[in-house]
Amino acid sequence: MTEVFRGEGIVQSPGLDRGFVMSGSPAKRIYLRPTGFLAGEAARAASAVGSAATLAGGPLAFTHVEVLARNEGHIAVATAPLRDVQGWASTSGGEVERHVTGLLSRISMPRPSFAGLTLDRTRLLGILNATPDSFSDGGMHLVPETAIAHGWALISAGSDIVDVGGESTRPGAVRVPVEEELRRVRPVFAGLAKSNTTLSIDTRNSAVMAAAIDAGASIINDVTALAGDSRSLRLAVERQACVILMHMQGDPTMMNVAPSYRYAPLDVYDFLEDRIEACIAAGLPRAKIAVDPGIGFGKTTDHNVAILERISLLHGLGCGVLLGASRKLVLGAARYTAGPMQRLGGSLGVALAAVEQGVQLLRVHDVVETRQAVDVWHALRDGL
Image 1 (cartoon, rainbow, N blue to C red):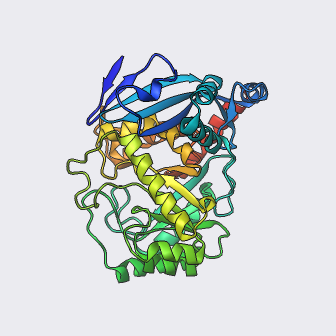
Image 2: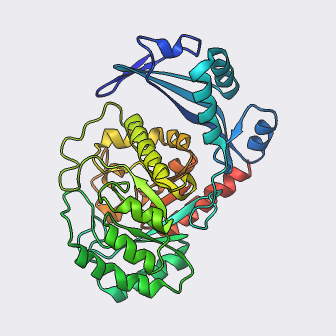
Image 3: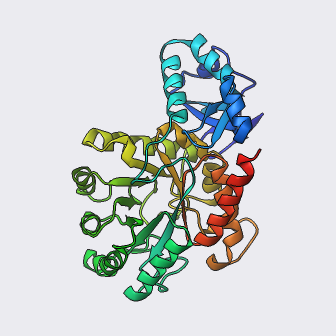
């Protein structure tokens, strides 16, 4: 069975054997996607007998692994029980065994706390856009007093983190002068400083990052993965801030004009892996890094759906995984024409699908509803 995507063909292989990674031409890369998820007593029982492994130290375990071997021009894919994948790696030996064993270890190892928050349950980032032009709530919280009040409302609703932004990076957005961005966010941080809630700054400018950290932010959420400003990575290292590295193809002004990938899930993985390695080389530990595939940032609906379908691939990076899909067009592009404020159902559907694949962090507008949905999901899964 073969599925053909833009750029590369996805070849569904019947199984794993010594020649799997040599199909067509020597594999450049091997990727592992945990699947076959269990929770509650079923997860504990399967893990105890070795037929499953814990996913990132959280409430889920995985019994199967999808192995993707990327060669020139195509990707061979096979899904097998965890034990079979371990056996195949051992039989293959050499670099294949070392790589697969290392990936499985990263996928299963518990994640350290992120900005003081454990990642053994789903954490919510409440979105606070102090902007006039964000795609969903632009202008609603531009006045400082209104933005501060909304921040406190997000906290009361169950946000673990309040993510404050002063510049829209929606498709077509233009750059905001740094002075204006600072003018928008400074009073918000001042107004939330006594909240005892973790604060995050959503920016691609190092000067704004520095000001926000001085005002109490402990997380930098950067759509350019600390690559858009030459001083950003150095600042993060000097302050030892936690960071969210997001993937974006291109710049907001043109990013959704004919974006192109060989295969989006793997291209995004490769980019984020490179950025993680750059951060670590600069002196920022992996424990302080989370990753975001950047739904809607330089991606078509097909790209977004492919990434969401295989988002558990990102656990192989050994970091917390964040999804920001709230109210985005991908949620309704196929069947609905509803505007952003009418996409709650789609937002909750995507959020729960991500939690089902072990995503630890959700960046959302509708905190009350998402908190309720996620809590019910955990209660039901833990009881199985």
